[in-house]
Image (cartoon, rainbow, N blue to C red; front, side):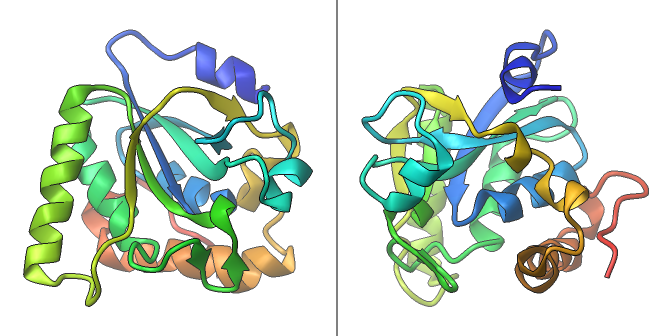
Amino acid sequence: MSAAKQVSNAPEGSETATFAGGCFWCTEAIYEEVEGVISVVSGYSGGHVENPSYEQVCDGRTGHAECVQITYDPAKVDFETLLDIHMHTHDPTTLNRQGNDVGTQYRSVIFYHNESQKEIADKYIDIQNERGTFGNRIVTEIVPLEHFYPAENYHQDYLANNPEQPYCVFVVKKKVQHFEELYPDKMKEGYRVKQ
C-alpha cells in the first residue's frame, strides 16, 4: 500500500495528528504500537519545498522536518495521550537534534490540525515547563499543519521491514522499548518489539 493511499483512506470518525521528533523511523514504530492508532505514515512537513525527497530533506535546506501523520480513533485514544507519548519518547528540550541525528530536519514539532489541538499542546507545554518535567525548557514548535508530504515507500513501516538494519537495532528498537516501559497500558494487544 502506498503512503499516499494510506493518508487518503482515513475511516469516517477518525482524527489526525502530526508530530516531528527526530528520525521518523523511530516515531512511526512507536505509534504503530499504540491502541487506537489506525495508521502511521512517515513524511515531511514544515518546509518550503513541494514534494521533497528524502535526500533533499536530509540536506537541511528544504525547511522540512521528518514527521509522522497518525490517523487514530478518538474513541480509543485522544490527542492529549498521543501528545504525551510524543513528548516522552524523544528529547523535546534540544534544538534541532535527537541523539546523533543533527539538523533542522530532526527538530521537535507539533503540527496542529485545528485550534483544539493547538490549545491542548500550548497548555501541555506550559504545564510541563512549570513542573520542570523534562529538566530543561521545551523547545518543541507548535505550528499549523500546512502540507504533509508522505515519504518514499521504502521509509514506511521501516522497522517492520528492516528489523536487523543497524540503526533499527541500536536506535529504533531502544526507543520503542522505552515507549513500552512507559506506556504498557497504551499498547495494542500482542504488540512488543522483538529484541
